[in-house]
Image 1 (spheres, rainbow, N blue to C red):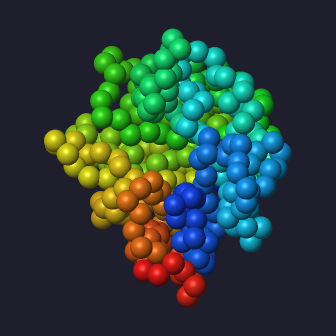
Image 2: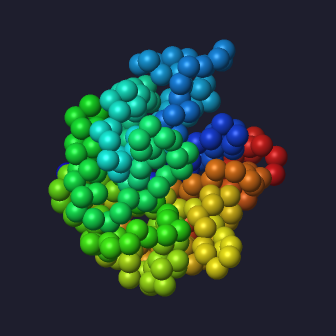
Image 3: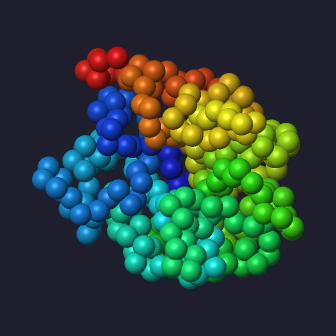
Length: 292
């Protein structure tokens, strides 16, 4: 089960309602990613498919042949509690509605003891945590019609008494479950920088053969810590990592942006910086795009 389920060598972007017009005007993207929890009961101007309401603009993008990937944020795969079957069912319905070849979630927990964190929290890198992830990944995968990819998250701290490095932890998770990785290169950079490790060394230790696609995003330094924000431009250091990892590989690459959206020309330029770093053809912005 090696090789990505997404188009080889493709560039993608996170689909958000705030920039749906800009995304529609990009020629050359091969896929987009939509937050699964944003696809729910809808209003007028939207259409229901497979029990999920798909925004009209997203449906038009899929009709053009752009692959859409549902990206979950609430399964809590890394939690001690058994994953909620209703949340998994929603993720599966999103994939059916969009005709998606893969779905993704996070190596994280978001709730415990009935309390919601409202944030993706890092799991301790222990055998016990691997056992919980293995159980929940298998339970979720049995209810999905398509493969699951799980994302490494950014963390400002590490749990004490770790039994694995991050690379070792991810490698064993892949070996135990056969799951794909959604490799967030920006998160590798953030975690390495915040723990005084070499980002490239950490990146090249990861199981590249199981990567479904990559996230690339911006961040900034605050109080001596590097914070993955998704609202800043991708820094040169992260683009350097993209060049090292993606050049010569056909792994799909995706720009994440979740706020402080720039004009269409700047968004296209940021995508093309990723294209240039990975040796891929640039995307273009159609003339009818939202004015820059």
